Image (cartoon, rainbow, N blue to C red; front, top):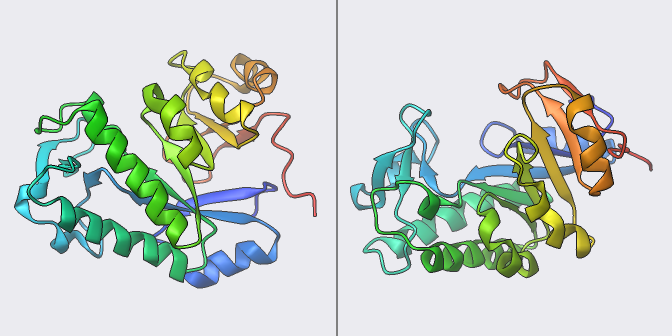
Length: 226
């Protein structure tokens, strides 16, 4: 964790308070990755998820299962309790913000009749809950509902918006002077950085494994300046 950047987005379970403090000592903000839309086996709280919350398998991620995020679902209160506990872990470790992943189940095949309004209600609840803990929160996924979600979130992290020609969807965050981050995993910085800089999106090229082996930021990722 030695990159010259303004923020790190790291796993909330796999990093302790000492790691967060070490990054803070370098003047770096630290974002807590927590999955909010799928079940992952092997997490410390994986035994807390009742069977009723688990739906279909997540394509491409063995063992991962979509969750029932519908407010009308039979175990929604349990889901809220689990997620509140997760976000509290982020707060207690000293993180500055939360990145709740997989908040777009309605655009996939979760095994439930999840609608766009269902997802919107859940995502707004996430943002309000994280703010209630004194942390910032970044939107992840669900680009189609950005116009409604942007007021609730403090920034957005998108993966491969150039590869999938969706960077224009991030414009409301840029217009609101909130961070808009783009992680790309294919090609070269020459293929997307000019577009990101022009759009005022902070982009970088990473290894798909996110193991630190590749990090090539665009010119407008200015790093730590204090």
